[in-house]
Length: 538
Image (cartoon, rainbow, N blue to C red; front, side, top):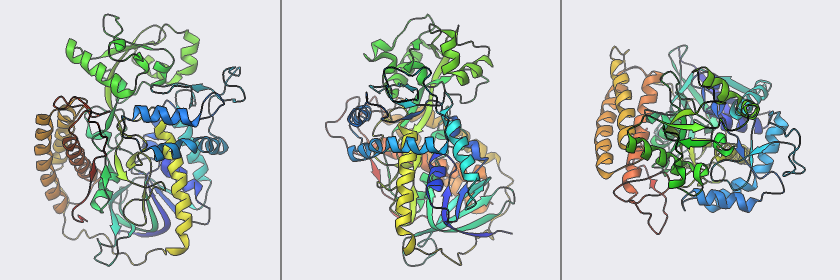
């Protein structure tokens, strides 16, 4: 039997953004935090590099703002950038207060007087401003926040819960446009439960699994973006998909990212013959922004017909490498690669979704009662290219801002009651799951081939034709069979892929992460690509 739940705040997603919001809210509120797999399955746990913030006297807010604007290809919203950077120090202090074990300077760094934590530098940054926990920052932050959440009796942590769709007043055919909660598949029971809430928060991460090769975990399927779109929310700049330049290339290594901090500490990118090449593409060499480095690697791989390039930090002292990059060192050793003596084979892979659900400075979407935070959202911070380590910062700053906004509205909103149950009376169990597997594979392959690092009009047209056929097939399947995690994710991923393709076709220029051979130059005016739902798709 399906169940009904009622909470003050429903948080869909259990990563850095979702947990931060839940922990910022007061303890008298009943909060549910949903994870569609195990709690640690999100992207936060796997983030290696760190969090960008202005933390000592050698750096300034203005410098961080300017670096972000420069990396963003003219599309960053300066108000969002400034808001995020100005709140960076307090966000980091909040994490320190929660107990996050950031790496300390031992001995203290004379270049950073008065600051006890070690700071590193990554591509696009003019200063060392990345606070980190060795090379496993995401894991350290996640474990700390999860421990804190488990100690809060008002926070209910629910695993194996897959959000199917949002419940809105238009969906129920009643007057108004407010979000009232969500229908959620309980994978243990196989039933779709009903979650009513005063406020609903999408913190579901990005959509990098739309590509064949990605650094993201399996759950990065654009769920929040697709659900918000179906509920009437605008989306923006989904053509900007960041490809991390350096993922481990090995047949047995699945989605292992080689942190950008290696290049920040002097690692060199090399061709198979040992020749460095980044200086031919950008005077900043290996410290150029990610889009430039990824395109340079892609260019060299295609030019030479090679499977990968190499990232070499073996010229640094062995002790330094093992101390600063223990996770990378140990992981590479599993594949018989000793990074203190050998170069690491690397390839680009889809990494971060810069566009998303349009929100304001409090994370509010177009639908009252619905918030989007973290990678799911479009705040205007990242522009046409996300600068390294700004993404985790965005999670904390906007999670805290959204929590404050929810508190301001508490007295005006009651918990919805008597929401209808999910209707499964017209569907049956599927005996054709091979269709899901086939469509999943086809989608990810043509997105990689046609909507990847380098694009053309013809490739985008081919992708659009294929994704529309897939959407029709998926819609028919969804209408006739019981939902499963695979079906829900495929439906969402195909919807987000279609939005990505439409966005890419609308941008007739090359800017930041969107590079097309048909329009290789940047237009003089930088405009966001905004898509507006024409009808409510419920």
